[in-house]
Image (cartoon, rainbow, N blue to C red; front, side, top):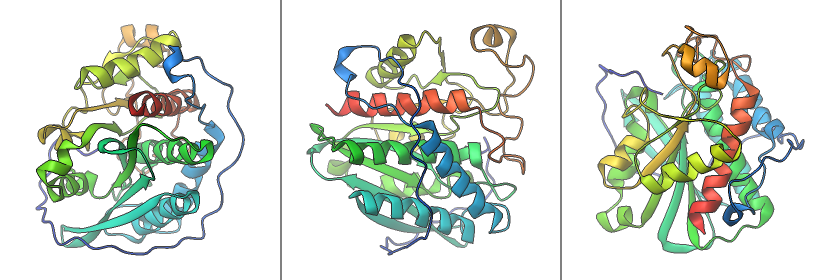
Length: 321
């Protein structure tokens, strides 16, 4: 998630498509226990194996460690991260494309992946930013969202899911510089193409080590979908306010696209009322390593990551039927 204020000058360049390859290892195959769902309409939504999501996080950590400690825009670590995700999607049967732009004098990339089939006039999108800040590997911010969205996409492929609506997944570049990649994508669409997006779901920081369970209160249908899922688990949620306008849903919302999403908290501090609902430590940040070098694989709460990953799949299945 980007800082509230950004003083950097941002520019956008031409669209290009690149072919990228990676030698990343396959994710683990362990399966987490099944979680309840709120109603029968989404019974087909799969459990997302937490071991698989964490395997992706380990790969992103290794990439950062091998590339100066970060996966930031315009750096080798970001390109290697994109290569890793793209290779997984290509092997699973997605149609992928890479969109190129320029920000702060460096080349950036968005990755877009379409699942074949579904009504092209009704597109459900799920996305996350793939870049980190320069000061750390960005495993919670935002390897967590990126890995969960990736594993949800791979679950679509494994299940052979054929939804009524068209499914599209995205990984954004240069979010930390001011939502550059997602804004570039939205601006690259004509009004007719934007109108085809029936919903954009955003996932930025979903494994915070002192987690909260926050739901965006933008589109009522999307909001209710997430709340229904957590209600089925007996988990209270709160409206997300800390990151409002600070992540990649904002360009979609500003263009009139219905948006929603999940968040587990950044540098705001957990109140006693929140700790009573969710556990954790009162008075401490939801993520003490926000935008820091300690945002590593040790900076993840497995329970929050597991629940939020399953909620992503629940929403993707529910909203695409």
